[in-house]
Every structure is written in structure tokens, then in C-alpha cells.
Length: 303
Image 1: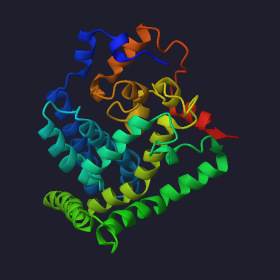
Image 2: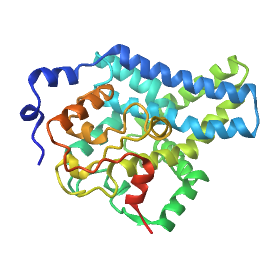
Image 3: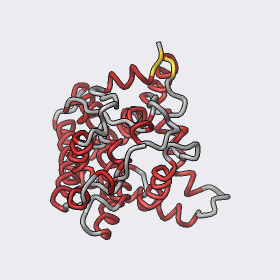
């Protein structure tokens, strides 16, 4: 088992790693939204098959960026103030991707507590790996044809309208907030004269974004050395791939997932430095280093 942070890192190192920065945080949030609007703007100015394909290829990573930043805000590690984490994490990151900061954070923190055990609430996402090539192809088809996304959409709407939902009133309130942010995005795009590109945003969310989410889950925990070992080096994977792969599949430093499980309070923008320190201490000497997502798929898919 890897040593605890207090045994491996000095107090000064832990303090520096845990320090939150509003400049870094706002840079990630604003940068993500600038790219979203640029992509939809290009499609709006030059409508056609090529620009549509460009959006379907590049926009999912920006939607994932918002989900990752929601995740950081859920840990309280994105901005310096908790109030900023909560507001930005909910209104600028979670709701635009039809998520909810509070409910996500509750489930995700439980995932951290139970990682490496059969009580991990996220286990269903990756415990069956490695899977066959045919199984992977079926999953990809379900994602790219919108079947996975529509199931998610039905679950979101069903949670607010179901007759037996215990928290029906809160669910309806959440749905109103989620729909309000979608309307706000549509209105913003309409002000630029490209309101129709909202449907590209939604189509991407229901298709290629679902595939990117799946690949991220596979990269983080599927076909790891030992899913039921409490050591994060055994139950979690970091992928140090080329920048273009991170741009498409793992934005905002989410690729440093083993380091995140080791010290979950470290902001995403300091995880690379944490990895450098762990390497210097010899903690990663016998850990396989993954340098591409193709390498991950080779480990997660049988022939």
C-alpha cells in the first residue's frame, strides 16, 4: 500500500499542492466557454457537413471540461471560496450538462471512500472490463446513435415527473434550472444570429459526448491491475498521452486520475506536480505508464 500523503510529502509540499487559485480556475472555466462559443460560431457562420463534423469531434471535450470542472467544484478544490465553487460549479458547469452539483458530489465522494472495494457506487461502469471487441463496438454504436444519451435524458426528465419520486418537488426545481440554462444558451446564441446551433450542442451531448464519457471511465478504472485493491496505484489509472488526445478525451488535467485518488483535495491544475513528486519518491517505479488512449483500449478490450 502506498504511504499516506503525510508520510510521503512534507507539510510545505502538501500545502502548496492543496492551494486553490481563482486565476487558474477562472482560466479553465472561461477558456472552456470561449471554445464552446467559438466552435458553435464557426458552425453558425459556415454551416455544412465539415463544420458539423468539427463540432461533433471537438465539442464533446468541451462538454467534458464542464463536467470535470463540476467535479472539481464538488470537491471544493477549484476556487478559493466554497461559495464560488458552489455557484460556478452549479450554474456554469453542472446545469449546462444536465447535471447537479450537490447530487453528483454526494455520489462521487462515496466513490472515493469506497474505491478498491465492491461497495464502489461507480463499479458498474467498469467492473466488466476487459470486454470483447464486439461488446465495445455495440457500446460505441449505442453512444453514437444517441441511445445512451436519450436514456440519460429520459432519466433526467423522469426524475422530475415520476409519480413515486420521494423528492419530486426538488427534482422539478432542478429540472427547471437545467432547462433554464439550456434556454439561456439558446438565447445567447440567438443574439449572435446562430440560435440554430443550439441543436448542434444538444446533438453532440446526446451522441459523441456519451462516447467520450465512456472512454474516460474506461481510462480511469477499467482493466486496472486490481480493482479491489485499496492502493490507488492498483485500482486507478493515469494516462500521460499527447496533448491532442487530452484535448479530445481528457481536458482539465482529468487524465491524472491516480494522483487525484491519492490526494483528492489537490486542484486539478496541480495534479501534474503531484505526479512529479510521487515519481521522485519512487512511488511509481513499478506502475505501468500509459502514454496513449490506444494503449488503454488494448488493455481494456480482448481480441
